[in-house]
Image (cartoon, rainbow, N blue to C red; front, top):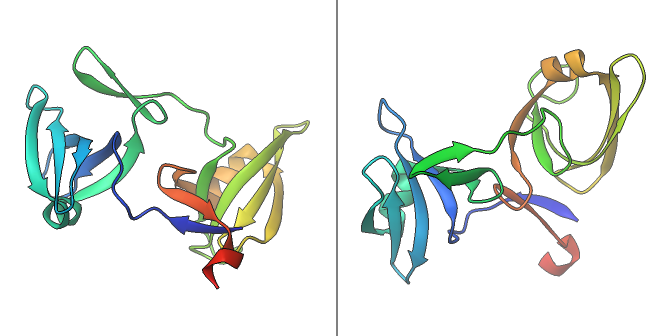
Length: 160
């Protein structure tokens, strides 16, 4: 299995406008060949029809309804989650390993003295385990996404 970033547009994806000084959130509601229909959360759920290319240029995928976010009283709310969870995608931010390397957390074992074991897959599908305190894990890794939201596992044998 190989880890790849999701590039395709899907219904119920949550995007944030990356070119405004304030955060402007949109949810995909319908997909056509060249256009998509989005609901803008800040403008009282106003719907827009916009070209896919234009939308992707100005917006960044940040989540998925009922996985990372939910709608409550016309507000977009992030679903609270633990810092290190199964199905999270993390990236190395220190030079202690390979800076920038990406891992998928497939299992977590909590140990004594605030230590945890992360069983992960790297981007090429290789099993890699990390054992350290949560405090040190925070220094080494940063969360960059979730499985099936920003990244997906594909069978690399089918690619050939």
